[in-house]
Length: 109
Image (cartoon, rainbow, N blue to C red; front, side, top):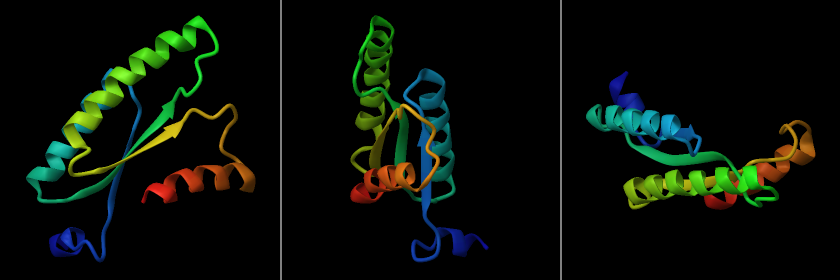
């Protein structure tokens, strides 16, 4: 079983996180655990990133997010593919919205 999950032809590990303190700490812990078991994380998706700050609340949140995104870039961009997903105005439901997300995800992969 261990050989199966370590085989890059049969298994792929992708972690999804958010650009906040708790999300970053959990991601660091998960990647450390994967490293200990010699499991290669191939992609790290950073979800819910504010792209355009249209009010003071979003400006403050965007600054905070940029801090945590930079931490993740500094720690992992040399060995893990980072994919940044924007915060969408609506839920990702329906073919059109799913296609929008898949274009972001798969252009990076």
